[in-house]
Length: 405
Length: 151
Image 1 (cartoon, each protein chain N blue to C red):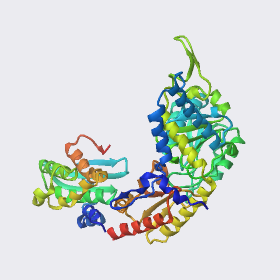
Image 2 (tube, each protein chain N blue to C red; image 1 turned 60 degrees about the vertical axis):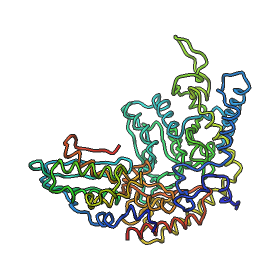
Image 3 (cartoon, each protein chain N blue to C red; image 1 turned 180 degrees about the horizontal axis):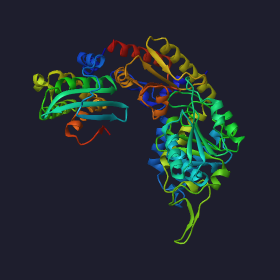
Image 4 (tube, chains in turn green, yellow; image 1 turned 120 degrees about the vertical axis):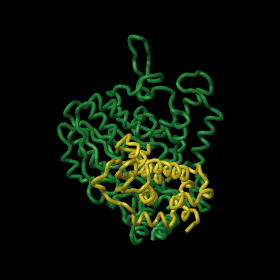
């Protein structure tokens, strides 16, 4: 096992104190911290190479363009896409899902059709489909989850009908940490000729993702949840689908030629990248992909599984702590409640101990409703967290209980 | 326990959270207003019985964090029997206290039980929790709306 917590030194923000105590950062499902390699890459771009891309013939523009396009190649290799043109840069997972809903969805979904999601989804994998269904007179179907927080596979398969035009499900649940059996789910949808979009926001930093092995038609993720900057993400789409889809936004860079009578759109992937993109963010994402590529991602997954198992054991043994989401396959996330203490109070008191957790509904209100709670406290892990930090969390929870005793 | 946490979670707040006063539905209320904090899901309903410009009775139901629930409870005990104008003055006093505009040291006597919320101003993320029920009560008094949101 490589010394993963030893990587902490690469993350400057982790070295600080909060409220006079060493920061224990357990809000990685919201956003991860950034290694110095990412920060330096973005800084270097702005200090040395800053220019617009795909236009200039001058040195800086050529450097910027080369750096930007090299990231497409890095991402392609990292997720094992077949072609670089299948890698579209977007603002993040949310924009990627909206892009597919507004282009693929609007051209394929008609009145009376169905879009299938699951009861585990983040709002960003619910609302874009709801908007599409509202516009088209289609219906949004939801595969239910069981008491452990797992999608009930029989029910999911029953909801794959002749009217289903697309399935959209998360790879890993942000609220509960459930890892969905997406390979089997994709196969089930494909056997009925239905394409599948996977929301991979919570998977990329924690496990190997191979879009061709999964046979995902679309796979969407954010840079900032995998040690990269905010404002950059990736939509992977199979070339055959991307080719059929109309453009998302109009503007510069997505065209071949423009006249007032007719515009000829650019080839993939530029057809979907209107306007000057987030060049620095893309370069930062490339540095994050490099960072992860130099690690043994299977070892990362194993280590994080140990962290989560330890956290589950330690928190589960504290009297009054209730774990929400007890799926057999989980990664990275532990949602919990302490008796009837509101999660916001838990979050405030943990913060006084230097511990950062998320409290609230985690942009997954239907999940909260399924478990009959308005909110939870959520600890979420990344490769730089340590067993000692889990123990600090347990001590913090005892403090919360003391205050409310 | 650190002193900072104690400054927020004072005994009065913990007590009112555990045993909220006037925590009931009021069947004969003359005004009923819902208050939401969509960011954290806190939700309270404030019931008022107004007679001759006076708050004859006030109660609330709903759920939220300790700060929001204790605040609603203390508010109900302090505004009951007050005129509408007096209640609005209390609202302003409370608002200035939790947003840090007023220095509580200057007016401890006037503040009474409200002084327990002085620590909230050090926790910007929790100001909305403390103010939710008060905004809802004010909305009910002004009768402008049947729903109040912090966002």
